Image (tube, rainbow, N blue to C red; front, side, top):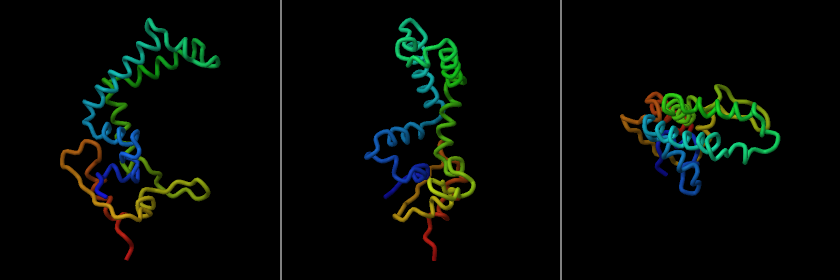
Length: 155
């Protein structure tokens, strides 16, 4: 298997067997000005549909959310996502793929506990080939330099 550094954090989630994960991986690999513009366009269309002439929010919200307060909150959430032409939203999405940002700092014991990045990557038991581009806008270079150590099998 040959994967990019950011792909390893999902342990195969970004494969064609998982179309939503594949799309997410491709989308989050775009430079933030491009993905931000896509988010801005989609968010603007959603804002128009839900709060513009089609009044989609009023027609589709379940009864418990069909309130002026809920509509106002949704309008503010969409407005916030579109600030900076969607680039902040895009950057948050990309950082979520980096093992240094997406994993807890320590293992959480117990049923349903989460592993820190070192433990999670150390548990991968299939061969992995890493590649990294000097112009990668998704994964920080520090991640690419850090990742081989936890993936190496113990002696």
